[in-house]
Length: 355
Image (cartoon, rainbow, N blue to C red; front, side, top):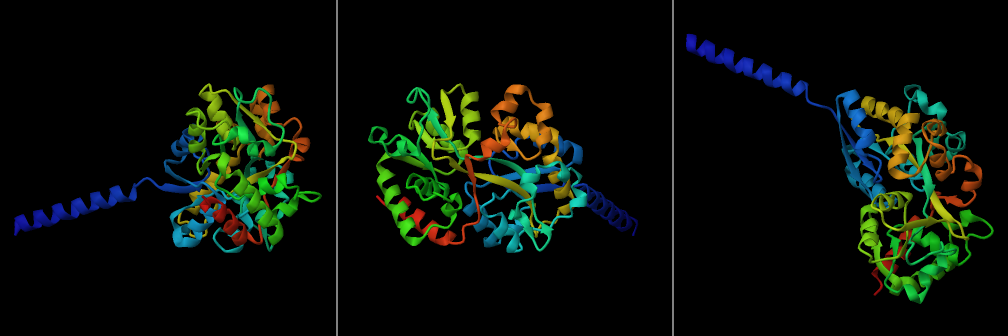
């Protein structure tokens, strides 16, 4: 009997120890965000402060994000970073949770030009916090272009056959529409093109196919295309420019005469998150001025919190156009919701599939 009691006691003790170790399991916050938004330089301090782990997955386009959320993966992620073209639809579809702004005290520091937009507001509720914003610029190899290209039309120049890359995103559709002048006089027309206009865009993009070396889907892929000297020009992100400069690649970045489209990225908490308290702490941390400066160091995107400028030198403030934000924004047509997004994607997929 004694040995049975001892065995039972040992089993119970082991169970208690196991249960205790499980209760101390490190909480994990799962992100589905754009590349650059989970860099260790600013994520690691949050992990240490909150005794948690950040697990990040990256998306290559807004449509990829929406597809994953609608495909039943919403419960797999706690925080997402939708851009201004899909933020409204994600909120309206109930895929994101409305925010209690009292839990995000730094929200009042964010740019009023961004927080006043209706992108993440539905029935008086706010579903996201502005995080960063920026353009989709021309990125080019300065050995091939001693002077910055002044028009998107250079992509069609036969001299650059097989030396161009475009993004696997509707931004490439918008760009072709700009070349055709469909953004005049109202740039918002880019996001609501007629069937006739979309047919013209498709024809224009098919004419570009001989010049396209590859259609890139991740930032790292585009950076590699430049470093391997497979391309000399592309539509890209400021993040690509920053990474190429760090690698001492001769890179330039410009917004051409037609201007360019751009984005405002928001951070949202998914409706299915089981870590909402930790997610709130993450949102608060990510929009604090000091963190925003660190995010900018990595991405070269413009911070949503203008107070980040106090932690920057004069050159960084100038490079981010924080000294003249209003003028800079006149050259960027921020993404909007696309009512006929399925039709746009149909056109883009036909272009990609064409030989």
